[in-house]
Image 1 (cartoon, rainbow, N blue to C red):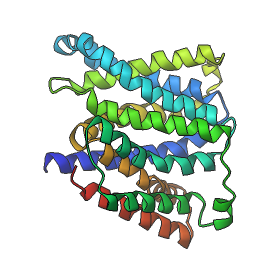
Image 2: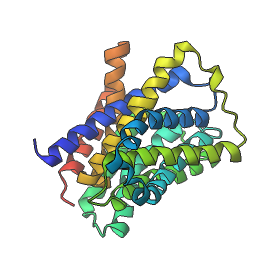
Image 3: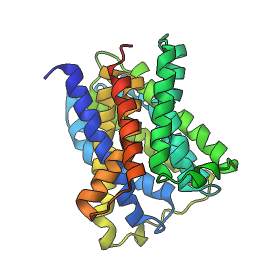
Image 4: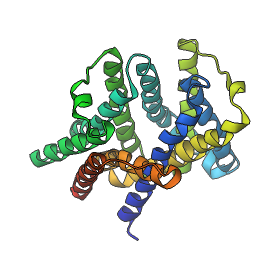
Length: 294
């Protein structure tokens, strides 16, 4: 298997793991503040990864040279989550799901300035199709719901958040060096996430309340911490180094498809014909973007 094909496979796996996190997050929603849950995810993931880094002398020596760059990467990563959760105080999940489709296009535009990459005019149409296809799924083919979309304060805040998500993907590529140890970079990115999310808790006066999480939510928290945080952080970092942020972010258009597949497999939930059409359109857009040559 070629290095590039392997990178595509691991990003596809990460996309399914993220899709699963949307489903699992519903099971722990409302128990404690989502920023506190995100901090807990970072803490658990970091603790699990710490022995592999701290008990290895050669990996420990990489911490000093990697720390500053990892803090920048984690800064944008954490800002996205903070922006997401704060925006949901003023807007709906439907609005954020719609606006999130702008991430691939926004990442491509920023890449023009950071990596001097150009976007052929025809690909703007592909990005537009990806947005349309994903919106069809988000609104379940209901045109009236789409036309009633009204941007508010929370939406503007979330637009700033998705800008940070794009910067996270770009910084993961930009700040990577050939002699970096990926496991150290991921560990320090998660550690940086702990620092930034802790600052957010203090700034917004949010209590931890981890004691409210019962045994019934343990498996959900474990999945969010290990699969959706630790594993995906590693996979996205590794994939971005090979493919670049533009192609990695284009997988976002597949999120509705992965969620729909997982809901069908594990909860036997079906989708309507319009959602299937939307999934096919967004999947086609992703395929075209992945075939593009940077």
